[in-house]
Amino acid sequence: MSSRRVLAAALVAGLLVRALALPLPGTGDVVIWKVWSFAGSNDLTSMYGIGGTPPERRALHWRGEAMTVDYPPVALAELAVAGRVYRLWSPAFDDSRLLNVAVKLPGLLAELAFLLWVGWYGRELVGDAAPWLVIAFWLNPALLLDNSVLGYLDMQMAVPLTIAVAAAWRGRSVLAGCLLTLAILTKAQALFVAPVVVVAALRQRTDRLRSLAEMLGAGAATAAVAFVPFVARGAWSNATQALSRLAAHDMLSAQAANVWWIFTWVLRVIDVGPEWGWWRSITQEVRILAITRAVDLGYPNARTVGLIVVGSLIVWGLVRMWRRPSFPIVAATAAWTMFGYAMFAAQVHENHLAPAVVLLAPAAAAEPRFRWIFWALTAIVALNLYLFYGLGEGWPAVFSRQVTYVDASVVLAAVSLATFVWFSRVLARAPR
Image (cartoon, rainbow, N blue to C red):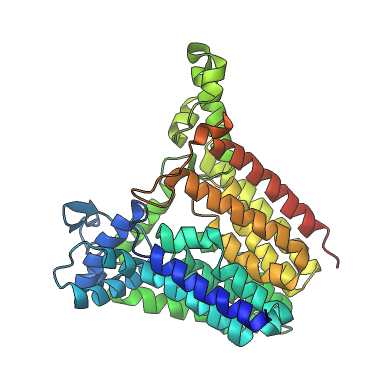
């Protein structure tokens, strides 16, 4: 079969899988998106609350659900547009499978934008591997599970962030600044990749001061477009209060397969081992542990430790990238940085590693040495999501996390840590 036919078949297969997956109910987060979509389709700029002393933190209501907001404005605007579209079908905003599709639609549009970008500019970056990139992205089980099945918002952040990395490498500072800001104002985790985008743009331009000014100006203009409607409504203090809540979640690891999940398991084993017996305590199903509880036990604050480790990793990655400038290295460093955040930062959720898969895809297409790491990351993300949520509400995993005796999520966390070390070694050995 010709390569064009293989590509066409892959595109059709991906569309069919998405057509089946989008109506699924996803995780409990999808209910949050529905509440936000309903509220945003009525009055977007009041979602954080308006004014007040102290600033009001508005509770949004829909069909007996009550939710506050802690996401940046671009994510809210996307859900508001999805809600407006859904109202054309259901003015009363009834719950339905079509509403599941509607709140997942921004993620699908982001995926399609990625395919268009690869079609227009991909060959300039990855050469003849562009079809591989399309198939590896479009049929990726981790990304399908994260977006179309479970309904997370990661694609809306990961796609512009990945294109921002490519734009920075091409020296297009204005475009990189706009897309980077768009990604950050969709999901704040993009902040951890921002240094890679900035340094990549500076590395590619001789007029570095001008490049930095262009990027900062473009980012400020993009942020202004996102925030000015809220400021004009008197909701600036409400928005900053809401966004500050992102750093307040009291969890070592929010079910992410990282070092803090391993640490959670160790603490729980030590805690109940003398009472339960060591075999039962070692094979227990692990639950989330609060940061404050670990601090009460005498351990350092995981937020502080995590930020120090991640910051140190970012500096190391930037130095290596500066000395070995190539598009595969820049894209891989961006993915590695996101991986480092997901592995060592506290409060990381089970889906937060998914953007690293998107970021690594162009590097893996351009440089085959990264392909095994790409597929390892894909497997880790897919298993992490599936272990906890299966295919969403009503579709639990078909096997227990005790199938490996020690909780499978802890085993996966150990594999993830080993993969990060492997990825780091590959980056460290990249030729100058």
